[in-house]
Length: 577
Image (cartoon, rainbow, N blue to C red; front, top):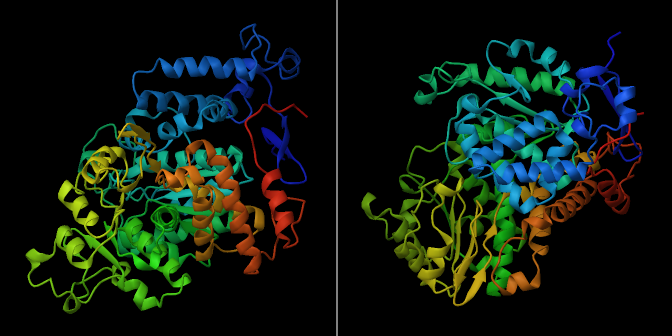
């Protein structure tokens, strides 16, 4: 019988209490989940036969954090800092998370957007050590065997990408894995999902990115992307294997492109416990910001007109979440849809075009648009002026497309225009907050997808809220895991949006700030988890209770809240048992 290299010991709430290490000697240092590096005590070094394999000094985790922070500060740029943190993670996962937790506001933009976009583009060049699982056509038939042989088997969350719709930079071939790694680090930092419960997966079905195909150093499957039946057969093989090996784990679909994102989400909704963050997480966090904006404006969402510039998966997901909320607030479904416009590279999406299915719902009958007489009329500016748009949302990846003229046009329709340039990474943002403040004399309510420095206007610094999915998906994941939900319902994302919006302080609302600060990341995530869990109980989809805990919530929201708090992981070294 094969002996595990190490085994974690869990408490009543599924929380990690300790670890049993079955390895000895330098082999102990090879596994990042158990290695403490120079923090192994003298007694541990003797027990684990590490004497001679480490320098004499025994450091505390506090010593190690200080050393790591100093090294990071000496790095020349953000991608070098990213590489260092990832390499630290590969050696000592607990220390890496302790470093991040020491200043989460500072490090989130490094481990995730915008820096992770560069890491995806440079993946083959900066590759250091295997992380997660790569499936490609040559090994997908062995998916079950590969998953079964992954080092950590107590998987609770998996983030899975096919690498095609990475942030605002598109098809990155095998290079999308850093997105999965980054998202899972946010699951750990925000929702306290321990790293050994997380699994990043790349579905490398090839790439249509010619630059990658022609790069001699490219590490991915060097073929054009699978399409059609071949693609969906590949996906089916993965889903069957994943469901068999990790039937109770949550699968987050990540950065699938356009129609594929909706097709995969809907096709496997009842097959695996899953959701698509680009569609549902994005929609939720944008709704949270709009709810906050309504508090500032002292107006109703039902009185606004919405334009989503960028009709990809994220943009239509935003439109869908807004429509759901409008219906919740009393509007009819058709009336709600009529207030939401989507725009792609050809202008406002109209029903007379040959559309991909996911765009149809929010397409407009051109006969109802009196101002749309010729294709030349179908411009962003004309839509804003003629439809009296008051909330402008950017998911287009087109930098600078929210010009002075565009922003001023929204301002003519409302005293406090809501301008949300959300595209990632930073260089893809539709507008710069500083410019929007100047163009509207500080009247615009602004939030962005990537981090921006505060804007100094009228003698005052204004924090720019980062409308980042990280306020939503970690809490949704924890809520699903803790409740034992057997599916991920749309209402979860409405509940998450309201939780995030309610977390914004009155002072921030007064100052027109639409998102909580990142230093409240953990608190927001836990509140989202509790709201999601409560909705799961209300919907009666928690028949199995929590599969990862001896403590049972028994469909009691208060007991569930206790479980959410207790099962959260924090980075600290564990005793050997």
